[in-house]
Image (cartoon, rainbow, N blue to C red; front, side, top):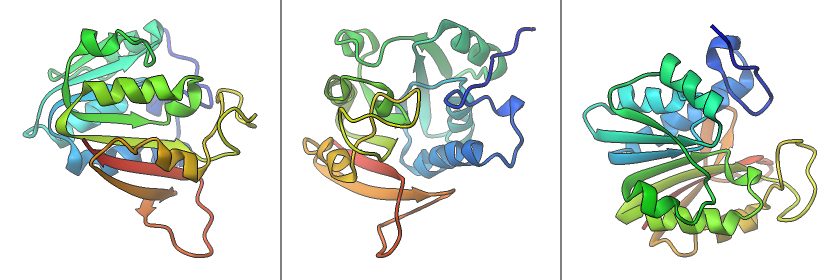
Length: 205
């Protein structure tokens, strides 16, 4: 059985120590989002599928279907094998494809964790998410902070990392927006004297 090669951006829990800080942060985001998840769910850039599988188990009564999308065929094959669940369907797709909303349809909940910093056209991505979210639906999206759109980053897999102000501007079209900040495995509103590196938005259309 061929194993995926772990990189700094592709989380493969079965190849990592359970105390790995990056793994714990990623899992924490799914647990944070769980209370908002219901109905038909989109997990965009699902990676190896552990989060989609975890969400399906955690919210088995509230979820009708989870569509887990990633752009990498090998990763999706791994996800289908290692994180199979009757309510999860793994689909190959490009997050910035303007035809994606027509292809996938509408969702009650959309999850997008550590995705937007990989995309040059983050505005097209946000437009796709908005189009796929039902009225009254909830989007939970996270991203690391950095020097801003179009600026270089020290992370080799990141196109850019938005500033906290640019991050908040992504959600101006939503009816309700709550911004949280992740610190390790905890999520909180901003406090004076603390520098935050990851923002998490909970938005209702």
